[in-house]
Structure formats: structure tokens, C-alpha cells
Length: 221
Image 1 (cartoon, rainbow, N blue to C red):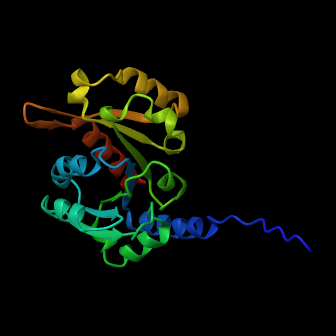
Image 2: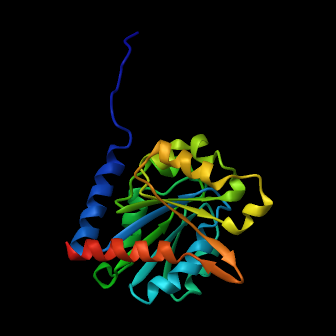
Image 3: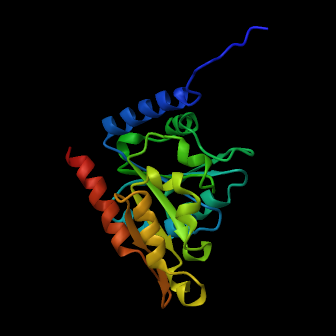
């Protein structure tokens, strides 16, 4: 029996479509964030709190990825931002083709910022380029300080990491500085932010300012 070996990049088609998406974003001057994190890490809550602040300066839309339901898209729409829902029906990540299909529903030239909330997972989404400018990883203090070293692939190509629920640090056995050190050891270029709910206010000012700076920088080019 002849053994047939096929050496082919199974992700080649995704890379091709991601490159096409990136060209569309560039020609429209649109900045794109691919947000990933575990279920319950606080991705949607983060968006609910920063979108109104970003919306004061940027025309923004969101693509939501989940296995099922429209729940997160409905939550985002309450902030006044256009939200499109992708249900993967069991798939553990979004891919470039799924994003391409949604782009047809948006007027890209009328937007400044597109945020893609990926499916809750730190494994599958990390290997799929969507054409984004920024890859953002969300992790909460309740997940444990060793989360980065357990899932290093998610951080290897990340641009930013957001540590959420920092207000719970007094109640969990986690050293946030150790968590930050692990992230830096995996990828020293990652810019790390913390968010917290204090006195009824969601603190994320530094993250909002950073996103605004990145969008404006792309628009200047």
C-alpha cells in the first residue's frame, strides 16, 4: 500500500481571507479588535462599560460570537452600538470567513472601530487570524494567576491583555503581579490593563484612552 503524505497548511484559506479582511479594513480606515477570553472572564461586561465612552469619540460596531443565543448582541445593542451575532452551533472559535460574511452587513466607511468578541475560549480562537489590528486577551482574577502559563498560545500573539474583576482581589488567593509577570514572560510586548468595579463605577479609563490612541494612529497613516 502506497502511503500518501499531504503537506498542506490547513489554515491557509483562513489566512487568505484574513488578509482580504485586513485590506478592507485598511482601505476604510477601520480599526479592528479581536477580543478573546474564557467564558465568564467578563468580555461582554467590559464592552458594556467601555462602548459608551468609546462611542463619544468613535463610530463603533460589534460582532458577537457564541455557540448559541442572541443574548450578548442584545446586551450590546442596549449601549446604542450596532451589534451583529454569529452563532457557531458548536464551533469553538470565529474564523475569517465568518467575519467576511458579516462585513457585508456593515457600512465600513462609516465606522472607526469594530470590536469582535470571539467565542469564549482561550485555545481555538488563538490560532485564527481574523484580519484584526489588535488581539486582546481578557482574563479575570478569579481564574487564577497561572492562567497565562496554562494557555500561553493566547498571549503569544496578543497586543493587549485586560485583567478584569480586580475589585475581587481581596477575596481570592491571587497575586495580580505574578499574573502580569507570567504574561510578560510569554510576550513582553503585551500591554496590560486592569479593570475594577469600585463604588458602582467600572474603572477602565486607561484602556479606553489606549484604544482611542490606537484608532487615531491608524487613521493618521
